[in-house]
Amino acid sequence: MSSPAVPAKPRILPAHPMRAAVGMVAFLALLWVIEGVDQFVLGGSLDYDGIVPRQVDGLDGILWSPLLHAGWAHLIANSIPFLVLGFLVLAGGLGQFIAVTALVWLLGGFLTWLTGFGITVGASGVIFGWLAFLLFRGFFARSGRQIVLAVVLFLAYGGVLWGVLPGTPGVSWQAHLFGALAGVLAARLVASADRRTSRGGRPSDGVSPYPIGP
View 1: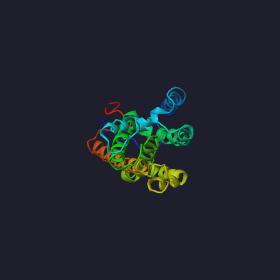
View 2: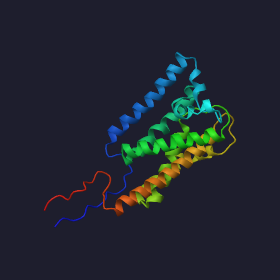
View 3: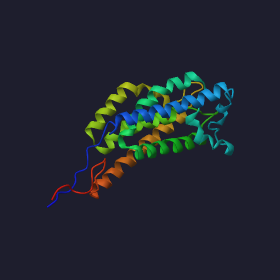
View 4: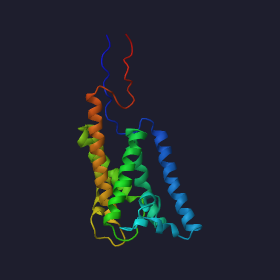
């Protein structure tokens, strides 16, 4: 008689770390290529393709804004947290990474379009969303391992959360705030989906749904 499959413990690192690392490096390399083209070929004109608040022709900036940066210093400041946090979000698998990133990217971008001032560019909204997702995921999932990771991340990056408040000239705190809120929502949705999967008897995280052996 077969025994029911047991869902795997929530992961804190990707199942294939090297593959995840290569993927994030390639994603970051794309941002550097785009900035290089913007700086050396287009004279910085891509910066005007970011989010233009409350302008219909600025809506498409929601799609492009996280790919664009206002100079090399801006991109360099975002690069390490982009790599680290994106790598950790990949612990849930590529499908979850895409879903979480899309929610943060689009919802955070849209709310920035509704409330922001000036043209917004940069991946920091997505970075804040990833950070918030990782900080809250463990609490919603009641996972001790993920909560420990959240504490470590808070100690390492918690200071940047002040960026959700207004006060720094030239910085879109709206993108930070709404990216973070979208990340919290993503954490809640992921935890709820995982609980439904568990109650339905469908194991997650690579565990086969079919028992092995007689």
